[in-house]
Image (cartoon, rainbow, N blue to C red; front, side, top):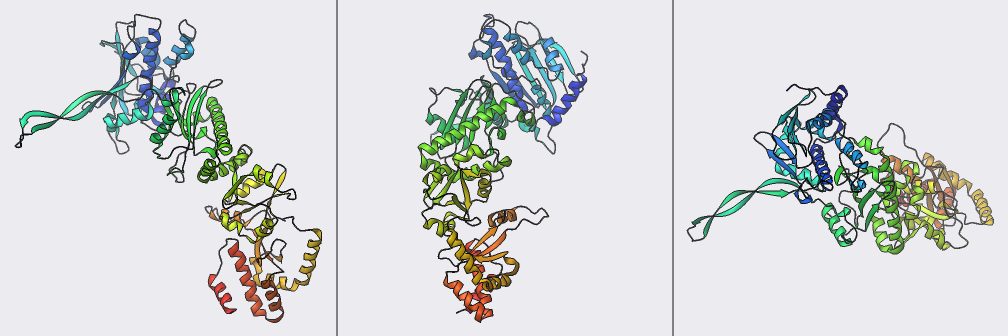
Amino acid sequence: MSKKQFKAESKRLLDLMINSIYTHKEIFLREIISNASDAIDKLCYRSLTDDKVGMSREDFRILISADKDSGTLTVSDNGIGMTAEELESNLGVIAKSGSMAFKQDAAGGEGPNDDSLDIIGQFGVGFYSAFMVSDKVTVISKAYGSDKAYRWESAGADGYTIAECDKDTVGTDVIMHIKPDDDNERYSDYLMPWKIMRLVKKYSDYIRWPIQMDIERPEARETGEKNEDGSPKYETVTKVERETLNSQVPIWQRSKSEVSEEDCISFYKERYHDSTDPAAVIRINAEGQVSYKALLFIPGRQLLDYLTSSYEPGPELYSSGVMIMEHCQDLLAESFYFVRGVVDSPDLSLNISREMLQHDRQLKLIAQNINKRIKNELIKMLQNDRPRYEAFYANYGRQLRYGAVANYGQDIESLRELLLYNTDVDKTATLKEYVGNMPAAQNVIYYAVGESVQKILRLPQAELVRSKGYELLCMTDEVDEYIVEQLGAQDEKKFCNIVTDDLGLDTEEEKKELEAREAEVKDTLDFVKDTLGDKVAVVRLSRKLVSAPVCLTTEGSVTLEMERYFKKLPPTGMEPPKARRVLELNASSPAFAALESAVKTDGERARKLANILHAQALLIAGEELEDPAAYAEDVCSLF
C-alpha cells in the first residue's frame, strides 16, 4: 500500500485551509456532519427508484462517538458510501465535490422532481477542515451495491493511502485522531460529550437526519440491602443511553398552518433569552430568483447588550438547516441592526470564508428583500398601532436615525417616513404629519436640536415660534442635524433651525425698526463685544426673542451641537471645528435697559452685566461656563 500525494494545487489549498480559511476550528464538526447528511440524502434519493435499498427514512441516522483513551472522534453514517475510485476522486483532489456531481447527474435522469434534492455540500472542501483539529484522519467506507469496503487515511499534506478493509454495513465512518493540547488550544475538549452536544446544537441542530450519540447518565439503583432504618439502599450506576442531539425540523421551515404566532413568540423568547414579547414577528417564504425562508423579530424592548461593544448585529444564516454564520451583519441595513432572527436558503453554498459570502449575489438579493419587509412591517405598525410604534421608536429610533445617514445617507429616503419627533412632551409627529398639521401661514418646518424635549421647548427662540401657533420638531440627537441637511425638505417645505436660521416671522417694517434700534444702541453692542472678546463673533439685537433677555445663536455651517459632537470624538491631532457664536440681546427687556444705562454711567457694572448675560446665554444653550465662580461673584456683587 503506497502513499499517494495530493496534487500540487490541492496540497497548497489543504495547507491554506488548515491554517487560514476557517475562522473557528470548531466548524469542522459541522462540515463532517453535513457530508454525512449528504451521503444519507443520496441513498434516500436512490431508494425512491431502487427497491433493493431496503431502508426507509426512519432507518437513516448519523452517529457520533468519542474515545478519550485512543483520542479519536468518529462520525458515522449509513448513507450511500464511496467506492475506492470515489475515495480517490473526492478525497484526493481538494475542492472536487461529489455532492455537486451527484446533483448534476440527478438533474439529467429520471425520477422524482430533482428540485427537491437538497444537497448541502456543494463546494468540496469541508471534509479537510477535520485537519484543523486532527493530526490524522481515517475514512472507512462501503458503497451501496458493493461488497468491498475501503480505508482512506491521511496525516495531512504529506499524502494519503487507500486500501481494502472490512466493513459490514453500507456507509462511511470518519475517524479523526484529535491533536494533543497545546498552549493555544484545548483540542481534548472535542472529545467531551458536553462540547460535542453544544456544537451540534449550535451548527447542525436542523440537519434533517437524527444525529445520535451514546451518553452516560448517572442513575440511582436499589442494591437489595436495607439501611438501619429499614429503607432500601441505593447506589449510583452509570447508564448509557443513545440520545438524539438535534431537533431536525426548524420552526421557520414549517408552514404557517403548522406554527402559530404564539409558537413563534415562544421560540423568540427561548432563543434570545427575552421575557418580553417581540414588537413584531416577520415570517417570509420567498421563491423566485432566490429561495429562502426567514423568521425575524423586532424586539419589544431594548436588548440588554444592545448598547455594548459585545453586541453583534445580524440574523443567524443557514443553508438547508446548517448554520453558516451566527450573526450575518450583511443581511441587514445599519438602520435595522436591532432585528433578530434566522434566514435559511438552499441557494447558499457552505462557503469557506466570510469575505466570499459578502460578495454572494443571492445573499444581496435576500438582504434587499428582508430590509424591504422590515420597513413595511414598521410602517404597518406606525399606521395601525401608534403606541406600539412609539414604544419601539423609544428603544430603537436612534438606530434608525444613525442608519439613515450611514454610507453617505444612501438609505435616508427609504427611512424618511419612519422618522418620528416630539412636537411637545407628550405628542409626536412624523415629518409628513408635521407638514399636514401646518397652518396655511406657515412656510417652513421649524426644528431645534437639544439635550431633551423639555429643554428645547424652553429655548428662548422657541417662544416666538410657538406663540404663532406653529409646532416645533424637537430633535434630541446630534445626528438629527445631518438628517435635516440630507433630507433638505419635506413635501417641498424646507427646514428652519430656530437657533441658527432666520425665522421669517417679522415684516419688512419690523426689520427696519430693528435696524434703526441697533443703530441707536451701537455703543452698547460694541461695549459688550469688546468685553467678551473672542468668546463671541457677533453681538446684535435679536428678532427671535419675546420675553427672554438673551440667547446664543450661531452663524455658518457649524452649530453648537456639531461642535459638541466633534469634541466627543477620539483625538485626531487636528483642532475640532468650532461654531461661530452670536450673542443676541432683547432690546425690549429690563436687562438690556439696565445694561444700556450702565454703559453710559458705570463701566464696571456694565462689564459685569455683559458677562452675566453671556453666561446666561451659555447656560440656556446647554454650554458649560468657563469660570462658574467668577459668574457667581458677578451676580452677587450686584445685590
